[in-house]
Length: 299
Ligand code: HEM
Image 1 (cartoon, rainbow, N blue to C red):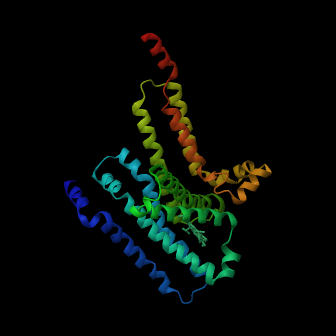
Image 2: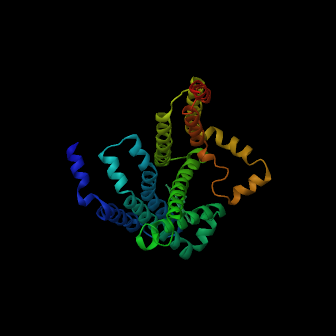
Image 3: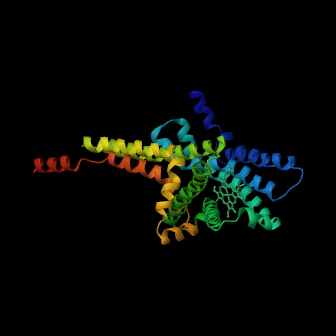
């Protein structure tokens, strides 16, 4: 354990060294499939778009989970992750820059393929918002950029950006496993890691609330656990309820119109996590009656 502690202090696995240690090999890997293509068409570039983003996604999942991992497992490793959070985020940005480059190549050189095979208005809006956040986050990660915004603006950009950039790939994989029914192992892996990353946030939040509880209500406790189990069940059965739920959530014409352009609307990929979050809130609820009784007794 102390060897690991020492290793994590080594300058080669911290700050900019860590950034280059991970982002340079990732960039080199981009050439592996590129060099194996016999010809380059829209389909190959589309493959490269997927290939490059798969290198990016684990890092945004990690970034969203880091602060919670530190609460749940306070140790040298999670402290190291926390210290290097910025550089892990920048690795994500490098892999996303590769995806951005392939997107540009496709839309510029394979225009027809792009509009016939790829273009979908809402995806375009979601993807563009994602890149705008990413650019703002990278810019404000440096002194010259952070000077342009106040500290509360900085927090808004980074918090919303991290949530958005987690939500995008998580929802992509959720739809792959919940709609098409022909998901590959890698789609499940990316879905579950994204799910667990966000679950870590909910558990850490619940842990902090639970530790502050002075009065527990047994009914709340059982009901909270029931709701959490419901959310967990929803997370593994989405293939069976997605079509039914989407149909009802987009029943009204305003909701069906929103679905065409509003990012993520009506939020089906996130429902199971929302239910788990609700269950955690109920489970860690202060018993109002006991608190009131205590106050009255004290009087
Ligand atoms: C306007 C911006 C964007 C465009 C035009 C775009 C386009 C694409 C295309 C063409 C694919 C491949 C689809 C296929 O072969 O079926 C793809 C896949 C994907 N994109 Fe994007 N994208 C954009 C932004 C983003 C952003 C911001 C993220 C967030 C991380 C993201 C995450 C993904 C993921 C997770 C996949 C699936 C990769 C896989 O197959 O495993 N994209 N995108």
